[in-house]
Amino acid sequence: MRFKDFIKEGKVKKGEKDSQLAISLIDTAKQDLNFLNAIKLTEISARRLVINYYDVLRSLIEALAALDGLKVYSHEAFTYYLQEKKEDILSRKFDRFRKIRNGLSYYGKEINITEAEDILIEMKSIISNLLNTIHK
Image: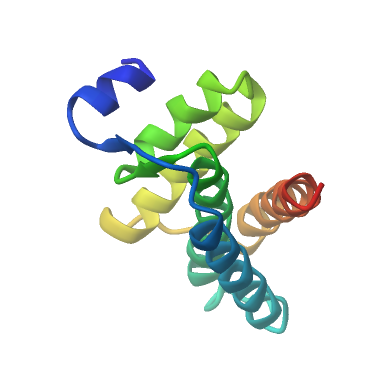
């Protein structure tokens, strides 16, 4: 599949650059980060933390898309959006996180503290880099 296929299917809409939406998404992501950073990683919190950090990551990528005049209605489309922007490594990582999140949210998969910690370290680094990139 390619990014333009998502546009054809209506899962991505082209429009005007939406700075207000991007600002709102970034502000919400920062608020969520403040909340999430206060939660201790435990066996009980591991699943929710991974899911919620994924949501923050997705929101930041959605903010980038808004700045490019795109409204994305499919998490999978973000993978191809990132490829289109020549962000191949980020694209692969995001897709891996998306699949992990889907497993945890929809398919009853479990995650232990060690796995969650590794994923969270990687996601937090990407989130930090995106926040720095967006603010430039």
